[in-house]
Every structure is written in structure tokens, then in C-alpha cells.
Length: 530
Image (cartoon, rainbow, N blue to C red):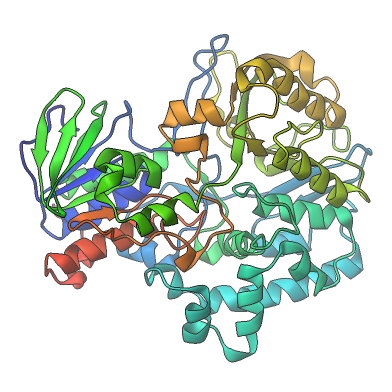
């Protein structure tokens, strides 16, 4: 990794997250000189393994993203990078407060149908099978659409989805999770709530909000083992970015960390370079940025963009995002429903509010609180135990970590502030855990809360939304890789095709750069140079 930036280069990539690294790798393989500028000490963006615990400083956890997401097969083939990924097995664990009653699903979508623990009835198994048959067909039809570049949902349906399923596809993307699930007659409130929680972690939306069906499609694609699986990253989530960075450097790209871009230079209506925090300038007529849309606008200057483009960016704002609580444990929590330590700690765990019958309504109450700017008293929790999948992430004392995503965290709180509520909200999350896993509090060594405003500072993401924009926005609802300014491209998580789809925004940006530079796209598939 370089320590000094060049004075000029053919392409500058601003931001060393996964999408920026994919873009840099493909452009470097095409023979372009590519320079990646990352303002943090390490690449990875939100895919980062860190050590945030003052009381357990050698214990690793995932402060940002803790699930890999969906890697389309076409992109994986094009990258030809040995990504350090393995299917998550078991994949999903949903505890209840009743001993012996839980949902524990194996790997892939079939694992959900065959889940153990007594929660999924025979009737619901048949309903899930029917729903998954339709989703399987949609995922199969959409295989070329994931990497085809941005276009409207309706256009994608007309172009790629079989006629018998076009109405279902558009309804899923535009409609609600609740309406889609109702078509198949799933009875269990806990099963419906678990599927909704699994899909909606990156959305400021409840299960009956228009658009809440779209993330279900992406989550189903991610659980397809043939398409990358609901994966665990060997070596921690940060190892994924490191693998891409290594290959980008082998292809000839230069990477500089701890080097912030403070301005994107524009002359007339074309980019000419970037200014770094230390005052140096790098000249280039092609700049790709993986920053969020509002940060891109600030780097360029809002007056440089047409008013219509600015309005489109502002329309992407939602009232909140998520909070992340990272916990250091002396030992893994023991759940009342399944008290022995075991494989269920390797799964993505969903702790849901309410009772089994009331889980869906409880999700609605939590979302209603968040929509009003209040902190829910019983929020749903999405938990990953990184050290259960890889003991090398434990510290020398054998302590474990948890990465807990709390959806629907308001950016601004009604009548109070996040700084005033940090301790109370941490206790709310711990109380939820304690209710399902008695004795959890006694095992807590340290806890670090990243609410939206801390995420904003820690990761440099406007409004603290790890996905940049809401996961209910898919395909053409998201930003294109081009901008109204010549030579300025975007490949951030706000770009198509969808939230939770890994690396495709970087691919799309690289294609446009190459097309605009009149290079053959086929050259992006050339192997890594020796």
C-alpha cells in the first residue's frame, strides 16, 4: 500500500470500501492507472473488523456491517478473486422465552423450511415452500438483471422476468412484505416477524410499509448457496475488503489510507482532480466516488449540480437508520429456550419483541415509536457473534463479542438527544437480551453503542445510515453510476441495484468509465497480471 499519492492518474477512486475496491480492481485490470484514496486507516468502509472495547482491547468485533450480503454469480466470476467466504450454517436462530421452543434454520433457503425448534408448523412449511418456489424463480430470472446496470423495476420485469411472474415481481418490489406473505398463508406470527426482521434490517420500514417487500427478494438471493450464500467471512468481515485490496494492488492500482479528500475539483462541467486534507492535489479527468450522495454533493459543491439532481438526492432521506451495539462477553449468552452452548451461536440471531402470537404487532409498535422520534422500549435485535464463527477473533482471555444491529433508530430524537439517551438505550438492548438469555448482564465486560450520529462520525456517512439509503429502494429507484458532471461517477451503496448486493455498484461504475474512455468492456475480464 502506497504512502504518497501521485500528482496525476487516469482514474481516482475516492473511498476504499468494497464497491470502490471492485471498481479499482476492474479498471486496473483494464490497464488504466488507478489511485484509491481512503480517509480511514484501513480499507473496507463499513466492512471493517475493529477493536472498540476499552476493557477488552484485543477483542475483535464488527462495528459496521456484520453480514456479507449477496454476491451475484456473474460478478464473482468476473472478479476471479478467491473471496474468503463460507456459507453460514446454521443460518438463522430465533429464540423464544419458552424452554425447548425456538427456530433454528440450517444453511440456505431449504434450511428455513426444515427449521428445528417447534415454531414452524407443517402448514407453514408448505407455505414457505410455495413462497420460496416463487422467489427461486424470480432470483433465477433476475440473474442478468443484478449486473445489468440501473433500470426501472417495471422495465426489468418486462425484460427478464417470465410473464407469469411479472405482476408478482413488481408487487413484491413496490408493495409490502405483509401483502406478499399473505398470498402464501403463513400463519405463525413469529415466523412472519422473523422473515420481516431478517429482511428489513437496512430499512426504515415496517413489514406493512410500501416497498418493504423488495429486501425479501435480496435476502432470498443471498441465502441461495449457489449464489454466494448467506456467508461468513473467514478472518472477519474486514478480510473481504482486504482480499479485494490485495488483488487491486496486484493489478496495478495504488492505495493510500489515512488520506482524506476535501474537495472534488470541477472546471466548467468536468472534473479535473481532487484536493487532499494536506493541501496536495491529484489531477484526473475521471473520478469515481463511493461516498454517500450528500457527501459527494458537499465535496463537489451543491451549486455545481442541477437543481433536479439535488432534489433527487434529497428525496432519498429517511428519518433514521440503525444503531449498533457491540458487546464484549466473558462467555457467550445462554438462551432460555436452548441453554447449552452450541451451533446456534454461529447463526444470525433475531431477538423479537412481544410473544409468539404478538410478534408482528410488536414490530409495528417499535416502528411506530421510531417513526415518532422515540426510542422503542422493546426493539427487535439482529445479532451476530463473530467469535462463535471464528475463535481467532477472541482475545487471549477467551472473551467473545457480539455485533447487535437495532433497526429503526431515529436520527433525531423527539424531546431529547442521543448523548442523553446512550446509557438508557444500551440498557434497553441489554434488557431485551436478558429476557431471552437470563444471566446475560453478568457476562457483559464492555459495551459500545454506535447510534446514527456516532455512525455518521465514525464511518463518515451522512445521517449515519450504513447502507447510505433505504433498502426499500431498488434498481432504478437508486442512483446511476453517472452524474450530471462529466467525468464524475458514483459507486456508493446508494447506487443500484439494491441494498445488500455487494460490489455491483463498483462494477457498474467501472463499465461507464471504460465506455466513456472508449475501452472495450471485455478487457475487464482479463486475469490478474503476474
